[in-house]
Length: 608
Image (cartoon, rainbow, N blue to C red; front, top):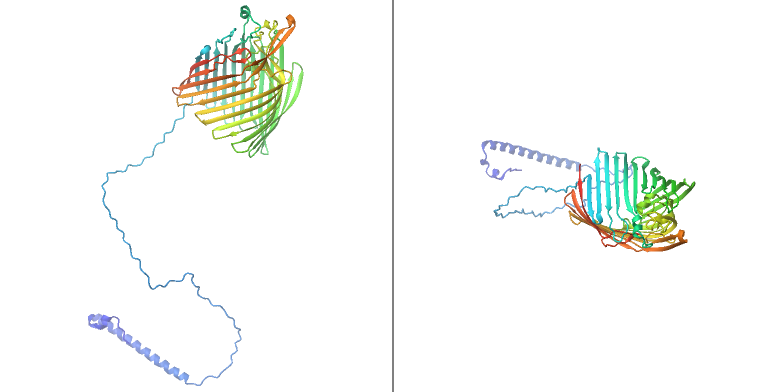
Protein backbone atom coordinates (compact mmCIF):
# COMPACT_ATOMS: atom_id res chain seq x y z
CA UNK A 1 0.00 0.00 0.00
CA UNK A 2 1.39 3.28 -1.06
CA UNK A 3 0.33 6.66 0.10
CA UNK A 4 1.15 9.80 -1.79
CA UNK A 5 0.65 12.99 0.09
CA UNK A 6 1.09 15.13 -2.92
CA UNK A 7 1.01 14.37 -6.56
CA UNK A 8 3.71 16.82 -7.38
CA UNK A 9 5.82 15.59 -4.53
CA UNK A 10 5.54 11.99 -5.67
CA UNK A 11 6.32 12.89 -9.20
CA UNK A 12 9.37 14.91 -8.30
CA UNK A 13 10.65 14.15 -4.78
CA UNK A 14 13.80 16.02 -5.60
CA UNK A 15 11.96 19.26 -5.41
CA UNK A 16 12.08 19.25 -1.61
CA UNK A 17 15.04 20.33 0.34
CA UNK A 18 17.23 17.99 2.37
CA UNK A 19 15.44 18.43 5.67
CA UNK A 20 12.06 17.80 4.15
CA UNK A 21 13.45 14.76 2.36
CA UNK A 22 14.55 13.20 5.58
CA UNK A 23 11.16 13.71 7.28
CA UNK A 24 9.33 12.27 4.40
CA UNK A 25 11.41 9.07 4.35
CA UNK A 26 10.67 8.48 8.02
CA UNK A 27 6.91 8.78 7.42
CA UNK A 28 7.06 6.25 4.60
CA UNK A 29 8.86 3.72 6.77
CA UNK A 30 6.22 3.98 9.52
CA UNK A 31 3.34 3.56 7.13
CA UNK A 32 4.89 0.41 5.58
CA UNK A 33 5.35 -1.13 9.04
CA UNK A 34 1.68 -0.55 9.92
CA UNK A 35 0.64 -2.18 6.67
CA UNK A 36 2.61 -5.32 7.54
CA UNK A 37 0.97 -5.63 10.94
CA UNK A 38 -2.49 -5.47 9.41
CA UNK A 39 -1.72 -8.29 6.97
CA UNK A 40 -0.43 -10.54 9.78
CA UNK A 41 -3.66 -10.00 11.89
CA UNK A 42 -5.82 -10.92 8.91
CA UNK A 43 -4.05 -14.24 8.34
CA UNK A 44 -4.25 -15.14 12.04
CA UNK A 45 -8.01 -14.69 12.22
CA UNK A 46 -8.51 -16.77 9.10
CA UNK A 47 -6.63 -19.77 10.57
CA UNK A 48 -8.53 -19.62 13.93
CA UNK A 49 -11.98 -19.59 12.25
CA UNK A 50 -11.01 -22.60 10.20
CA UNK A 51 -10.10 -24.61 13.30
CA UNK A 52 -13.43 -23.70 14.99
CA UNK A 53 -15.60 -24.77 12.10
CA UNK A 54 -13.70 -28.01 11.80
CA UNK A 55 -15.02 -29.24 15.28
CA UNK A 56 -18.17 -31.42 15.76
CA UNK A 57 -21.58 -29.60 15.99
CA UNK A 58 -23.30 -29.02 19.39
CA UNK A 59 -26.38 -31.10 20.15
CA UNK A 60 -29.87 -29.62 20.27
CA UNK A 61 -31.24 -28.58 23.68
CA UNK A 62 -34.53 -27.19 24.90
CA UNK A 63 -34.35 -23.77 26.49
CA UNK A 64 -37.28 -22.60 28.67
CA UNK A 65 -37.71 -18.86 29.06
CA UNK A 66 -39.08 -18.10 32.53
CA UNK A 67 -39.72 -14.33 32.00
CA UNK A 68 -42.89 -13.72 29.94
CA UNK A 69 -42.75 -11.66 26.81
CA UNK A 70 -43.38 -8.04 27.47
CA UNK A 71 -43.21 -5.98 24.35
CA UNK A 72 -42.21 -2.37 24.60
CA UNK A 73 -42.34 0.56 22.27
CA UNK A 74 -39.01 2.02 21.46
CA UNK A 75 -38.51 5.69 20.98
CA UNK A 76 -38.68 6.69 17.41
CA UNK A 77 -37.46 9.82 15.78
CA UNK A 78 -40.23 12.42 15.33
CA UNK A 79 -41.07 13.18 11.78
CA UNK A 80 -40.67 16.87 11.12
CA UNK A 81 -43.70 18.77 9.92
CA UNK A 82 -41.52 20.71 7.56
CA UNK A 83 -39.06 18.31 6.02
CA UNK A 84 -35.57 19.41 5.39
CA UNK A 85 -35.09 20.34 1.82
CA UNK A 86 -32.16 18.63 0.21
CA UNK A 87 -31.96 20.27 -3.15
CA UNK A 88 -28.83 19.62 -5.02
CA UNK A 89 -29.57 22.52 -7.29
CA UNK A 90 -29.50 25.83 -5.49
CA UNK A 91 -29.36 28.89 -7.58
CA UNK A 92 -27.32 31.54 -5.87
CA UNK A 93 -28.79 35.06 -5.88
CA UNK A 94 -26.86 37.47 -7.93
CA UNK A 95 -25.88 40.62 -6.08
CA UNK A 96 -27.58 43.75 -7.36
CA UNK A 97 -25.48 46.81 -7.66
CA UNK A 98 -27.09 50.29 -7.61
CA UNK A 99 -25.62 53.42 -8.94
CA UNK A 100 -26.90 57.02 -8.81
CA UNK A 101 -26.43 59.36 -11.70
CA UNK A 102 -25.72 62.57 -9.81
CA UNK A 103 -25.72 65.96 -11.49
CA UNK A 104 -24.70 69.00 -9.43
CA UNK A 105 -27.28 71.84 -9.30
CA UNK A 106 -26.37 75.33 -8.36
CA UNK A 107 -28.65 76.79 -5.59
CA UNK A 108 -28.66 80.06 -3.70
CA UNK A 109 -31.30 78.94 -1.08
CA UNK A 110 -30.19 79.38 2.50
CA UNK A 111 -32.62 77.86 5.10
CA UNK A 112 -33.52 80.14 8.00
CA UNK A 113 -33.81 78.98 11.55
CA UNK A 114 -37.36 78.17 12.69
CA UNK A 115 -38.96 80.40 15.30
CA UNK A 116 -42.24 79.89 17.18
CA UNK A 117 -45.01 82.39 16.45
CA UNK A 118 -46.10 84.49 19.40
CA UNK A 119 -49.82 84.21 20.23
CA UNK A 120 -51.22 87.62 21.01
CA UNK A 121 -53.50 87.32 24.00
CA UNK A 122 -56.32 89.80 24.20
CA UNK A 123 -56.05 91.82 27.34
CA UNK A 124 -59.24 91.60 29.41
CA UNK A 125 -61.07 94.92 29.75
CA UNK A 126 -60.30 96.79 32.92
CA UNK A 127 -63.10 96.85 35.45
CA UNK A 128 -63.51 100.14 37.24
CA UNK A 129 -64.93 100.43 40.72
CA UNK A 130 -66.72 103.74 40.19
CA UNK A 131 -68.88 105.41 37.58
CA UNK A 132 -70.96 108.54 37.13
CA UNK A 133 -73.80 109.13 34.65
CA UNK A 134 -75.47 112.42 33.76
CA UNK A 135 -78.13 113.07 31.12
CA UNK A 136 -80.61 115.75 30.07
CA UNK A 137 -83.67 115.56 27.83
CA UNK A 138 -87.03 116.92 26.78
CA UNK A 139 -89.66 117.83 29.38
CA UNK A 140 -86.63 119.06 31.38
CA UNK A 141 -85.80 115.49 32.27
CA UNK A 142 -82.66 114.94 34.34
CA UNK A 143 -80.97 111.58 34.93
CA UNK A 144 -78.06 111.26 37.38
CA UNK A 145 -76.35 108.19 38.82
CA UNK A 146 -73.24 107.68 40.89
CA UNK A 147 -71.76 104.42 42.13
CA UNK A 148 -68.57 103.84 44.09
CA UNK A 149 -67.08 100.67 45.51
CA UNK A 150 -64.24 101.45 47.90
CA UNK A 151 -61.98 98.55 48.87
CA UNK A 152 -61.22 98.85 52.58
CA UNK A 153 -59.04 95.72 52.58
CA UNK A 154 -58.92 92.33 50.85
CA UNK A 155 -62.23 91.22 52.38
CA UNK A 156 -64.15 94.44 53.10
CA UNK A 157 -65.84 96.88 50.71
CA UNK A 158 -67.77 100.09 51.23
CA UNK A 159 -70.34 101.03 48.60
CA UNK A 160 -72.18 104.23 47.70
CA UNK A 161 -75.08 104.40 45.25
CA UNK A 162 -77.00 107.55 44.33
CA UNK A 163 -79.73 107.88 41.69
CA UNK A 164 -81.95 110.75 40.61
CA UNK A 165 -84.64 110.92 37.93
CA UNK A 166 -86.80 114.00 37.53
CA UNK A 167 -88.95 115.97 35.10
CA UNK A 168 -90.49 119.41 35.22
CA UNK A 169 -93.57 118.17 33.40
CA UNK A 170 -95.31 119.78 30.46
CA UNK A 171 -97.79 117.13 29.27
CA UNK A 172 -100.15 118.66 26.75
CA UNK A 173 -103.70 119.22 28.01
CA UNK A 174 -102.88 118.74 31.71
CA UNK A 175 -104.43 121.45 33.92
CA UNK A 176 -102.41 120.79 37.09
CA UNK A 177 -98.71 120.58 37.74
CA UNK A 178 -97.32 117.23 36.54
CA UNK A 179 -93.67 117.40 37.59
CA UNK A 180 -92.03 114.52 39.45
CA UNK A 181 -88.69 113.39 40.81
CA UNK A 182 -87.33 110.29 42.47
CA UNK A 183 -84.09 110.37 44.47
CA UNK A 184 -82.42 107.58 46.47
CA UNK A 185 -79.14 107.20 48.38
CA UNK A 186 -77.81 103.82 49.53
CA UNK A 187 -74.73 103.10 51.67
CA UNK A 188 -73.53 99.53 52.14
CA UNK A 189 -70.68 97.64 53.81
CA UNK A 190 -69.77 94.12 52.68
CA UNK A 191 -67.38 91.51 54.07
CA UNK A 192 -66.49 88.17 52.45
CA UNK A 193 -64.51 85.53 54.34
CA UNK A 194 -63.83 81.87 53.63
CA UNK A 195 -66.78 80.54 55.65
CA UNK A 196 -69.09 83.54 55.94
CA UNK A 197 -70.14 86.68 54.11
CA UNK A 198 -72.37 89.48 55.30
CA UNK A 199 -73.69 92.85 54.21
CA UNK A 200 -75.28 95.81 55.96
CA UNK A 201 -76.94 98.82 54.36
CA UNK A 202 -78.75 102.03 55.16
CA UNK A 203 -80.55 104.34 52.79
CA UNK A 204 -83.11 107.00 52.19
CA UNK A 205 -85.57 107.84 49.40
CA UNK A 206 -87.56 110.94 48.47
CA UNK A 207 -90.24 110.91 45.79
CA UNK A 208 -92.49 113.71 44.56
CA UNK A 209 -95.60 113.16 42.42
CA UNK A 210 -98.70 115.19 41.56
CA UNK A 211 -102.35 114.16 41.36
CA UNK A 212 -102.76 115.85 37.98
CA UNK A 213 -105.29 113.39 36.47
CA UNK A 214 -108.47 115.40 36.65
CA UNK A 215 -111.59 113.99 34.92
CA UNK A 216 -113.55 116.02 32.40
CA UNK A 217 -116.60 116.06 34.68
CA UNK A 218 -117.34 117.93 36.78
CA UNK A 219 -115.97 121.00 35.03
CA UNK A 220 -113.77 123.07 37.38
CA UNK A 221 -113.28 126.82 37.17
CA UNK A 222 -109.88 128.47 37.13
CA UNK A 223 -110.33 129.58 40.74
CA UNK A 224 -111.01 126.01 41.81
CA UNK A 225 -107.96 124.80 39.91
CA UNK A 226 -105.80 127.44 41.63
CA UNK A 227 -106.97 126.20 45.03
CA UNK A 228 -105.85 122.60 44.34
CA UNK A 229 -102.37 121.63 45.53
CA UNK A 230 -101.77 118.25 43.81
CA UNK A 231 -98.29 117.67 45.24
CA UNK A 232 -97.60 114.55 47.24
CA UNK A 233 -94.22 113.77 48.81
CA UNK A 234 -93.16 110.30 49.89
CA UNK A 235 -90.31 109.77 52.34
CA UNK A 236 -88.61 106.53 53.21
CA UNK A 237 -85.58 105.48 55.28
CA UNK A 238 -84.40 101.93 55.76
CA UNK A 239 -81.69 99.77 57.31
CA UNK A 240 -80.99 96.11 56.81
CA UNK A 241 -78.52 93.33 56.43
CA UNK A 242 -77.97 89.82 55.23
CA UNK A 243 -75.64 86.97 56.14
CA UNK A 244 -74.63 83.73 54.39
CA UNK A 245 -72.75 80.76 55.87
CA UNK A 246 -71.06 78.28 53.52
CA UNK A 247 -70.42 75.24 55.76
CA UNK A 248 -73.32 75.26 58.19
CA UNK A 249 -76.86 74.00 58.48
CA UNK A 250 -77.82 77.67 58.82
CA UNK A 251 -77.70 78.74 55.17
CA UNK A 252 -78.66 82.42 55.03
CA UNK A 253 -80.75 85.13 56.62
CA UNK A 254 -81.76 88.69 55.80
CA UNK A 255 -83.76 91.42 57.51
CA UNK A 256 -84.85 94.97 56.73
CA UNK A 257 -86.64 97.72 58.59
CA UNK A 258 -88.27 100.57 56.66
CA UNK A 259 -90.05 103.68 57.84
CA UNK A 260 -92.28 105.46 55.31
CA UNK A 261 -94.30 108.64 55.39
CA UNK A 262 -95.86 111.36 53.22
CA UNK A 263 -96.95 114.99 53.17
CA UNK A 264 -100.23 114.10 54.89
CA UNK A 265 -98.61 112.78 58.09
CA UNK A 266 -99.09 109.17 57.09
CA UNK A 267 -96.53 106.85 58.65
CA UNK A 268 -95.65 103.20 58.42
CA UNK A 269 -93.08 100.91 60.04
CA UNK A 270 -92.35 97.63 58.32
CA UNK A 271 -90.00 94.86 59.52
CA UNK A 272 -89.34 91.84 57.33
CA UNK A 273 -86.96 88.99 58.26
CA UNK A 274 -86.31 85.63 56.60
CA UNK A 275 -83.96 82.75 57.33
CA UNK A 276 -83.18 79.39 55.70
CA UNK A 277 -81.94 76.19 57.36
CA UNK A 278 -80.70 73.16 55.41
CA UNK A 279 -80.12 69.64 56.79
CA UNK A 280 -78.97 66.60 54.80
CA UNK A 281 -80.53 63.38 56.14
CA UNK A 282 -79.84 60.03 54.42
CA UNK A 283 -78.77 61.79 51.25
CA UNK A 284 -81.93 63.93 51.07
CA UNK A 285 -81.96 67.72 51.53
CA UNK A 286 -84.50 69.15 53.98
CA UNK A 287 -84.94 72.92 53.84
CA UNK A 288 -86.85 75.06 56.33
CA UNK A 289 -87.73 78.73 55.80
CA UNK A 290 -88.67 80.96 58.72
CA UNK A 291 -90.35 84.33 58.08
CA UNK A 292 -91.48 87.24 60.22
CA UNK A 293 -93.42 90.12 58.62
CA UNK A 294 -94.61 92.90 60.95
CA UNK A 295 -96.20 96.16 59.82
CA UNK A 296 -97.61 99.07 61.80
CA UNK A 297 -99.02 102.29 60.36
CA UNK A 298 -101.45 105.16 60.62
CA UNK A 299 -103.37 107.45 58.24
CA UNK A 300 -104.56 110.81 59.49
CA UNK A 301 -108.24 111.78 59.33
CA UNK A 302 -109.48 112.79 55.86
CA UNK A 303 -112.75 113.55 54.14
CA UNK A 304 -112.60 110.25 52.23
CA UNK A 305 -112.40 107.89 55.19
CA UNK A 306 -113.89 110.02 57.96
CA UNK A 307 -111.60 108.80 60.78
CA UNK A 308 -107.96 107.99 61.33
CA UNK A 309 -106.96 104.48 60.43
CA UNK A 310 -104.45 102.49 62.43
CA UNK A 311 -103.26 99.05 61.45
CA UNK A 312 -100.90 96.49 62.95
CA UNK A 313 -100.30 93.01 61.53
CA UNK A 314 -97.85 90.38 62.70
CA UNK A 315 -97.29 87.42 60.41
CA UNK A 316 -95.05 84.43 61.11
CA UNK A 317 -94.36 81.54 58.77
CA UNK A 318 -92.65 78.16 58.77
CA UNK A 319 -92.14 76.34 55.47
CA UNK A 320 -90.34 72.96 55.57
CA UNK A 321 -89.65 71.13 52.31
CA UNK A 322 -87.97 67.94 51.11
CA UNK A 323 -85.87 68.08 47.94
CA UNK A 324 -85.79 64.80 45.99
CA UNK A 325 -83.27 64.41 43.14
CA UNK A 326 -83.56 61.27 40.99
CA UNK A 327 -81.65 61.35 37.69
CA UNK A 328 -83.74 63.73 35.54
CA UNK A 329 -86.46 64.25 38.19
CA UNK A 330 -86.46 67.15 40.64
CA UNK A 331 -89.25 67.09 43.23
CA UNK A 332 -89.75 69.61 46.04
CA UNK A 333 -92.36 68.54 48.61
CA UNK A 334 -93.23 71.32 51.05
CA UNK A 335 -95.93 72.97 53.08
CA UNK A 336 -96.39 76.54 54.29
CA UNK A 337 -97.70 77.17 57.81
CA UNK A 338 -98.54 80.78 58.68
CA UNK A 339 -99.92 82.60 61.69
CA UNK A 340 -101.39 86.11 61.29
CA UNK A 341 -102.39 88.45 64.10
CA UNK A 342 -104.47 91.61 63.54
CA UNK A 343 -103.71 93.56 66.71
CA UNK A 344 -106.10 96.44 66.06
CA UNK A 345 -109.10 94.14 65.65
CA UNK A 346 -107.90 91.38 68.03
CA UNK A 347 -108.18 88.80 65.30
CA UNK A 348 -105.82 85.94 64.50
CA UNK A 349 -105.78 83.07 62.02
CA UNK A 350 -103.74 80.03 61.02
CA UNK A 351 -103.14 79.29 57.36
CA UNK A 352 -101.88 76.15 55.63
CA UNK A 353 -100.75 76.15 52.01
CA UNK A 354 -99.23 73.56 49.67
CA UNK A 355 -95.77 74.28 48.31
CA UNK A 356 -95.02 71.53 45.79
CA UNK A 357 -92.95 71.85 42.64
CA UNK A 358 -91.64 69.24 40.21
CA UNK A 359 -89.63 69.16 36.99
CA UNK A 360 -88.56 66.31 34.70
CA UNK A 361 -86.08 66.42 31.84
CA UNK A 362 -87.76 64.47 29.05
CA UNK A 363 -85.15 65.06 26.36
CA UNK A 364 -82.02 66.65 27.79
CA UNK A 365 -81.94 70.39 27.15
CA UNK A 366 -84.61 70.13 24.45
CA UNK A 367 -87.60 69.60 26.74
CA UNK A 368 -88.15 69.89 30.49
CA UNK A 369 -91.67 69.58 31.87
CA UNK A 370 -92.55 71.24 35.17
CA UNK A 371 -95.56 71.73 37.41
CA UNK A 372 -96.41 73.25 40.76
CA UNK A 373 -99.04 73.80 43.42
CA UNK A 374 -98.12 76.70 45.68
CA UNK A 375 -99.76 79.05 48.14
CA UNK A 376 -98.62 81.86 50.43
CA UNK A 377 -99.62 84.69 52.73
CA UNK A 378 -98.47 88.16 51.62
CA UNK A 379 -98.58 91.30 53.74
CA UNK A 380 -99.55 94.45 51.84
CA UNK A 381 -97.95 97.76 52.84
CA UNK A 382 -98.46 101.41 52.08
CA UNK A 383 -94.91 101.64 50.66
CA UNK A 384 -95.55 98.84 48.15
CA UNK A 385 -98.81 100.44 47.06
CA UNK A 386 -97.37 103.88 46.24
CA UNK A 387 -94.39 102.26 44.49
CA UNK A 388 -96.80 100.50 42.14
CA UNK A 389 -99.24 103.39 41.83
CA UNK A 390 -97.87 106.74 43.07
CA UNK A 391 -101.30 108.38 42.65
CA UNK A 392 -103.01 106.62 45.56
CA UNK A 393 -104.69 108.67 48.26
CA UNK A 394 -103.17 108.81 51.77
CA UNK A 395 -106.13 106.89 53.19
CA UNK A 396 -105.93 103.19 52.30
CA UNK A 397 -107.15 99.98 53.88
CA UNK A 398 -104.09 97.82 54.64
CA UNK A 399 -104.71 94.07 54.90
CA UNK A 400 -102.81 90.87 54.15
CA UNK A 401 -103.62 88.91 50.99
CA UNK A 402 -103.45 85.17 50.56
CA UNK A 403 -103.00 82.92 47.56
CA UNK A 404 -104.99 79.82 48.46
CA UNK A 405 -103.32 77.94 45.63
CA UNK A 406 -101.57 78.62 42.35
CA UNK A 407 -101.58 75.51 40.15
CA UNK A 408 -99.53 75.58 36.96
CA UNK A 409 -97.95 73.30 34.37
CA UNK A 410 -95.39 74.17 31.76
CA UNK A 411 -92.52 73.17 29.53
CA UNK A 412 -89.18 74.79 28.80
CA UNK A 413 -86.05 73.98 26.86
CA UNK A 414 -84.13 74.88 23.73
CA UNK A 415 -85.40 74.57 20.16
CA UNK A 416 -81.88 75.17 18.82
CA UNK A 417 -78.52 76.01 20.30
CA UNK A 418 -79.43 79.69 20.32
CA UNK A 419 -83.21 79.65 20.82
CA UNK A 420 -84.84 78.85 24.16
CA UNK A 421 -88.52 78.74 25.08
CA UNK A 422 -90.85 78.57 28.08
CA UNK A 423 -94.63 78.06 28.01
CA UNK A 424 -96.89 77.90 31.06
CA UNK A 425 -100.57 77.65 31.92
CA UNK A 426 -101.96 78.23 35.40
CA UNK A 427 -105.00 78.77 37.57
CA UNK A 428 -104.85 80.73 40.85
CA UNK A 429 -107.33 81.36 43.65
CA UNK A 430 -106.61 84.51 45.69
CA UNK A 431 -108.40 85.95 48.72
CA UNK A 432 -108.31 89.69 49.53
CA UNK A 433 -106.48 90.55 46.33
CA UNK A 434 -105.83 94.33 46.24
CA UNK A 435 -107.28 96.25 43.28
CA UNK A 436 -106.70 99.94 42.47
CA UNK A 437 -109.94 101.83 41.85
CA UNK A 438 -110.45 105.55 41.28
CA UNK A 439 -111.72 107.57 44.22
CA UNK A 440 -115.18 109.16 43.94
CA UNK A 441 -115.82 112.74 42.93
CA UNK A 442 -118.22 114.93 44.91
CA UNK A 443 -118.69 117.84 47.33
CA UNK A 444 -117.29 115.97 50.35
CA UNK A 445 -114.42 114.44 48.40
CA UNK A 446 -113.55 117.86 46.97
CA UNK A 447 -112.54 119.03 50.41
CA UNK A 448 -109.18 117.30 49.73
CA UNK A 449 -106.69 118.04 46.97
CA UNK A 450 -106.89 114.41 45.87
CA UNK A 451 -110.69 114.27 46.02
CA UNK A 452 -111.55 115.38 42.46
CA UNK A 453 -111.42 111.94 40.93
CA UNK A 454 -107.65 112.38 40.59
CA UNK A 455 -106.49 109.68 43.03
CA UNK A 456 -106.96 105.97 43.65
CA UNK A 457 -108.13 103.83 46.52
CA UNK A 458 -107.51 100.13 47.22
CA UNK A 459 -110.37 97.62 47.37
CA UNK A 460 -110.07 93.92 48.14
CA UNK A 461 -111.87 91.04 46.48
CA UNK A 462 -111.58 87.30 45.94
CA UNK A 463 -110.25 86.75 42.41
CA UNK A 464 -109.74 83.58 40.41
CA UNK A 465 -107.27 83.97 37.55
CA UNK A 466 -106.57 81.77 34.55
CA UNK A 467 -103.31 82.65 32.84
CA UNK A 468 -101.25 81.50 29.89
CA UNK A 469 -97.77 82.76 29.06
CA UNK A 470 -95.02 82.10 26.55
CA UNK A 471 -91.42 83.24 26.29
CA UNK A 472 -88.71 83.03 23.61
CA UNK A 473 -85.05 83.88 24.17
CA UNK A 474 -82.63 84.26 21.27
CA UNK A 475 -78.98 84.38 22.30
CA UNK A 476 -76.91 84.19 19.11
CA UNK A 477 -73.65 85.36 20.67
CA UNK A 478 -72.32 87.92 23.07
CA UNK A 479 -73.16 90.68 20.58
CA UNK A 480 -76.87 90.06 20.07
CA UNK A 481 -79.65 89.04 22.46
CA UNK A 482 -83.40 89.13 21.99
CA UNK A 483 -86.29 88.08 24.23
CA UNK A 484 -90.04 88.01 23.66
CA UNK A 485 -92.72 87.20 26.21
CA UNK A 486 -96.50 87.44 26.28
CA UNK A 487 -99.15 86.75 28.95
CA UNK A 488 -102.91 86.34 28.79
CA UNK A 489 -105.21 86.68 31.84
CA UNK A 490 -108.85 85.93 32.48
CA UNK A 491 -110.25 87.15 35.81
CA UNK A 492 -113.33 86.11 37.77
CA UNK A 493 -114.19 88.38 40.73
CA UNK A 494 -116.51 87.73 43.66
CA UNK A 495 -117.99 91.11 44.65
CA UNK A 496 -116.46 93.70 42.31
CA UNK A 497 -117.84 94.05 38.80
CA UNK A 498 -114.35 93.83 37.24
CA UNK A 499 -110.76 93.23 38.22
CA UNK A 500 -110.03 96.95 38.26
CA UNK A 501 -106.99 98.19 36.34
CA UNK A 502 -105.65 94.71 35.62
CA UNK A 503 -104.80 94.17 31.93
CA UNK A 504 -105.96 91.05 30.11
CA UNK A 505 -102.83 90.95 27.90
CA UNK A 506 -99.22 91.90 28.57
CA UNK A 507 -96.32 91.55 26.14
CA UNK A 508 -92.78 92.85 25.76
CA UNK A 509 -89.86 92.61 23.35
CA UNK A 510 -86.28 93.39 24.41
CA UNK A 511 -83.16 93.46 22.25
CA UNK A 512 -79.50 94.39 22.75
CA UNK A 513 -76.95 94.59 19.94
CA UNK A 514 -73.22 95.27 20.08
CA UNK A 515 -72.78 96.79 16.61
CA UNK A 516 -69.01 97.27 16.73
CA UNK A 517 -66.39 97.53 19.42
CA UNK A 518 -67.40 101.18 19.87
CA UNK A 519 -71.10 101.27 18.98
CA UNK A 520 -73.95 99.54 20.82
CA UNK A 521 -77.74 99.78 20.65
CA UNK A 522 -80.88 98.33 22.16
CA UNK A 523 -84.61 98.69 22.37
CA UNK A 524 -87.81 97.40 23.91
CA UNK A 525 -91.51 97.43 23.18
CA UNK A 526 -94.22 97.14 25.83
CA UNK A 527 -97.85 96.32 25.18
CA UNK A 528 -100.71 96.48 27.68
CA UNK A 529 -104.22 95.37 26.88
CA UNK A 530 -107.47 97.01 27.87
CA UNK A 531 -108.30 97.67 31.53
CA UNK A 532 -111.48 98.65 33.35
CA UNK A 533 -111.92 101.31 36.02
CA UNK A 534 -114.91 102.70 37.91
CA UNK A 535 -115.95 106.38 37.83
CA UNK A 536 -118.07 107.35 40.88
CA UNK A 537 -119.80 110.69 41.37
CA UNK A 538 -121.05 111.13 44.94
CA UNK A 539 -123.79 113.77 45.33
CA UNK A 540 -125.45 112.21 48.34
CA UNK A 541 -125.03 115.29 50.59
CA UNK A 542 -126.77 117.39 47.93
CA UNK A 543 -129.44 115.24 46.28
CA UNK A 544 -128.77 111.80 47.70
CA UNK A 545 -127.60 110.51 44.34
CA UNK A 546 -124.72 108.20 43.59
CA UNK A 547 -123.74 107.39 40.00
CA UNK A 548 -121.26 104.78 38.82
CA UNK A 549 -119.82 104.17 35.39
CA UNK A 550 -117.34 101.58 34.17
CA UNK A 551 -114.56 103.19 32.13
CA UNK A 552 -112.44 101.17 29.70
CA UNK A 553 -108.85 102.24 29.20
CA UNK A 554 -107.46 101.64 25.73
CA UNK A 555 -104.56 99.30 25.10
CA UNK A 556 -101.23 100.87 24.21
CA UNK A 557 -97.75 100.30 22.77
CA UNK A 558 -94.66 101.92 24.26
CA UNK A 559 -91.53 101.86 22.06
CA UNK A 560 -88.15 102.75 23.57
CA UNK A 561 -84.61 102.62 22.15
CA UNK A 562 -81.07 103.67 22.99
CA UNK A 563 -77.80 104.15 21.11
CA UNK A 564 -74.34 104.49 22.63
CA UNK A 565 -70.72 105.09 21.64
CA UNK A 566 -67.62 104.20 23.69
CA UNK A 567 -64.76 106.64 23.21
CA UNK A 568 -62.51 104.46 25.38
CA UNK A 569 -62.77 102.13 28.36
CA UNK A 570 -63.75 105.01 30.61
CA UNK A 571 -65.89 107.45 28.65
CA UNK A 572 -69.06 106.71 26.68
CA UNK A 573 -71.99 108.74 25.39
CA UNK A 574 -75.60 107.66 24.87
CA UNK A 575 -78.93 108.80 23.48
CA UNK A 576 -82.25 107.40 24.71
CA UNK A 577 -85.66 107.73 23.19
CA UNK A 578 -88.84 106.86 25.13
CA UNK A 579 -92.39 106.60 23.83
CA UNK A 580 -91.11 106.93 20.27
CA UNK A 581 -94.63 106.40 18.91
CA UNK A 582 -95.62 109.66 20.66
CA UNK A 583 -98.70 107.98 22.07
CA UNK A 584 -100.12 109.93 25.03
CA UNK A 585 -101.72 106.82 26.48
CA UNK A 586 -103.18 106.58 29.98
CA UNK A 587 -101.34 104.28 32.35
CA UNK A 588 -103.99 105.05 34.98
CA UNK A 589 -107.37 106.68 34.41
CA UNK A 590 -106.91 110.33 33.36
CA UNK A 591 -103.15 110.17 33.95
CA UNK A 592 -101.58 110.68 30.53
CA UNK A 593 -97.89 109.98 30.14
CA UNK A 594 -95.31 112.21 28.51
CA UNK A 595 -95.12 112.04 24.72
CA UNK A 596 -91.95 111.54 22.69
CA UNK A 597 -88.95 111.89 25.00
CA UNK A 598 -85.29 112.18 24.03
CA UNK A 599 -82.47 112.17 26.56
CA UNK A 600 -78.72 112.41 25.92
CA UNK A 601 -75.89 111.96 28.35
CA UNK A 602 -72.51 110.44 29.16
CA UNK A 603 -71.03 107.88 31.53
CA UNK A 604 -67.54 108.06 33.00
CA UNK A 605 -65.82 105.16 34.77
CA UNK A 606 -62.87 105.75 37.07
CA UNK A 607 -60.81 104.60 40.03
CA UNK A 608 -59.77 106.68 42.99
